[in-house]
Amino acid sequence: MSQNSADLPWKVRLFASLFSSAFKFMIRRTDGSINRRLLNFLDYKTSPSPNKPVDGVITTDFTIDEARNLWFRVYTPVPRTSTSGSEVNVPVIFYFHGSGFICMAANSKLFDGFCYRLARLLPAVIISVNYRLAPEHRYPCQYEDGFDAIRFIDKSYLEILPSHANLKHSFVAGDSAGGNIAHHMALKASKSELSSIKLTGVIAIQPFFGGEERTRSEIKLSRDPFVPMDTTDWMWRSFLPEGSNRDHQVSNVFGPNSADISELKLPAVLVIVGGLDPLQDWQKRYYEGLKKSGKEVYLVDYVNAFHSFYLFPCLPEFPLFIEHVKEFMQEQMST
Image (cartoon, rainbow, N blue to C red; front, top):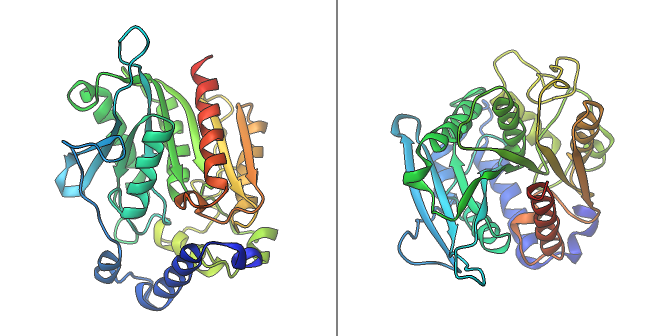
């Protein structure tokens, strides 16, 4: 990002500077813990709008387990009608937010705004899952929460989703750490019986993968304001089981400790990467690993995109991103 930072809108540059400074000097403690109170203060949360559409989208919250703070927000685009007057069905996307497994939530303003845009522009019903956070809750809590939400909706969708939501065209998606979760949700789904949900595709937006090796992009962009190398190292230490390193099978998914997935039936995967993202080499290895495992996978590389570019609709890559995701979804739904 630093190579072209002067070309970015001032709001993006300001956000990057404030995020980097706050995280490094105020939120991350020297003992490895998080100043959760300060983090929550800085993380503005939004409320749902169940009765009045906002930009053509209605939002409603549903709780699964209060003890785990496990809940989800449904983003429902206002129904469209066909020429015959019937409602047009739309796909469903199970979405998992990013931020290194350790911060933010489904109702954080940044991710809330992103889900509004996805619901309206694709269009699709978005189910944004709120999962437990590390280091208070380490692996596998995030994956357990995510799949519990999917199974809950599989059984209770009639009371939750609008009539024009088509669960037979369901996608699992996520950005950064959420992209990692999305991959593992697809793995879990391939080993489980879901009665109502049919996963049609995986949308991995700059997914957070890693390993003990230092890749070229990590070294070259080690001081990136969004995902500097020392911060991503700390995130993995906070998330992975005590005593594990970054070659754990959930972080280095095609590394020395990984499981063979060649026999698993996975849906097609779209991998979004950015040329200014320090994690891009791991994301490309993920793409190559899926190809070698015989999976249908597509790679889209935005040369001038930094990590989390998709949260800023003012950037020129954003409409391209929407079009690529829409094309991928339409292609998978037509097969």
